[in-house]
Image 1 (cartoon, rainbow, N blue to C red):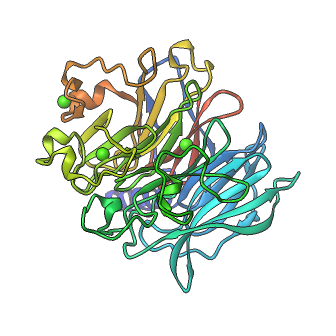
Image 2: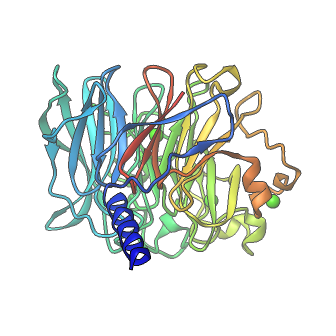
Image 3: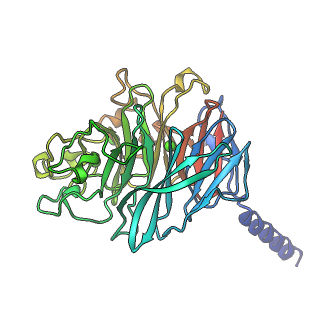
Length: 392
Ligand SMILES: [Ca+2]
Ligand SMILES: [Ca+2]
Ligand SMILES: [Ca+2]
């Protein structure tokens, strides 16, 4: 009986631990000189974050709340609550700042389900005022592959990504499919008026042609956009169907190959001229892909030497499935990763040893965002335990 009581008490405390999310042990880092700490807790399924300044962070919750963290404390009242469609991968997904404007990317129902970019002016107390519809993008038929990440270019334009939404058009490299429609594409847009950025690579036949906005197409789905602060080059991550999550350098006019190619084209059984080749486009293999698809998510370049000079401007990449954080040093002209494990000469991570060679940290509860803080430290947003971790 005593034994049974002890067992039930153990079970009860186990359940309480579970309820308080205390079951999640702290993540661990490979480098013993660095430490990881829980910085903010209590977020519900957070998808993206944005540092406004030293004291304030905006964090998005998938179900539609825009939360404010002030001086390390999560504020009770959301800044904004959007009525989103949160089915599957839909929801409140992306946030970015350009000047004194904040942009949000969310799946909403307005007649049909769409992905909408909202624009706000940022007030002195981090208020989001003057809501306007900045841009409407497709959101159907799939409930997954909505994309949603936003980023800002070094020259002040807004990047956005929308996934393939299970469409079968020219955006998906189906030669006889419907014309481009903003699905499976990365856009570069003027944040002032929503017009295409002036030097976009693809030029359509008329001013309304979606490809005027395109920086890239043939994207399956992306949970990560990152701008290299040194060169201004955009990188993305993409998710494979059953295999080959990818990390790509997004050159202007980049065609990532979906849905004929995922991972290196040499493994796909198709040739480059089988793809939809829009004028000024270029197919390019991923810099690195992962043979197993476990949800590679954000990519961030650590624009700081606060973790030590060796980490300055390294690329950090997270995943949702394992909760791992990966680290990559770049080559001298920053067009490639320096991959030291010989097994990565094929540019495909296909075993544990190769995965271990790029591992920086583990034990995060599904990473959705990574950011360099204003203090130069690295911050990691963790989905399942609703926590922002700080690496110092
Ligand atoms: Ca690709
Ligand atoms: Ca390999
Ligand atoms: Ca990020």
